[in-house]
Length: 282
Image (cartoon, rainbow, N blue to C red; front, side, top):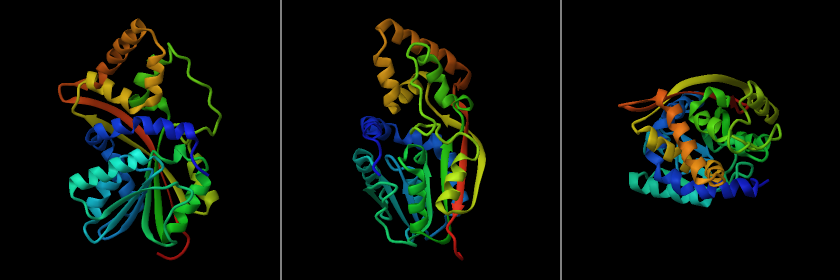
């Protein structure tokens, strides 16, 4: 089952900006990458699959971790994201990372191929998460683990709500179906763990991971980054009059002040790390 075309179009439009801000995004989400590495038990010489890796993360960071004897494969449904990941790997001189266009529920890999499967902020947008997790389990080696990161609730993550709570005063947010593709689709405790169990994973577990998003940029630059990262935000801003758009930006920058200092932005954040193992001896 392919992703909804609207979702594909949205991410295709934002892909150039994710590449533009790639290093800042890597820094912001580095704690999540480390949490996924630890949860999935990734180490030297491992073969790792990163699903929905966007312009290359966390696959690129993992490629450096597993070393020249290891191998990292990254897939994404968006060709522009895959092209960006390949350019990043070339710039970094990584020879052990490969990136391809593919869908999570139709992985182009043989069974029992990987020591770990990870995905950071991908599963929320899959058309059929159960089918995708079944595929992850198929390509995992017996006894090995998959680890997924999803956002906890929006109001626990100023990364999201500092913009949305202001913009939503001017543009009414749509009412979403309970299982619609959305950043907070799996924010509810236990929801994604149940998906893993239904797909056949053993010992599915979930933990709340609290960390700080830190980036050495100003509030003004952060506003630009967040706007460019999100095609949805861009569309909403485009619906406003010039005066409204100026006022929205003013209010957002005012709301960001408590998270800004001379060292840059520092925002508390919460995600859920959900994992499970493929049946069989490790």
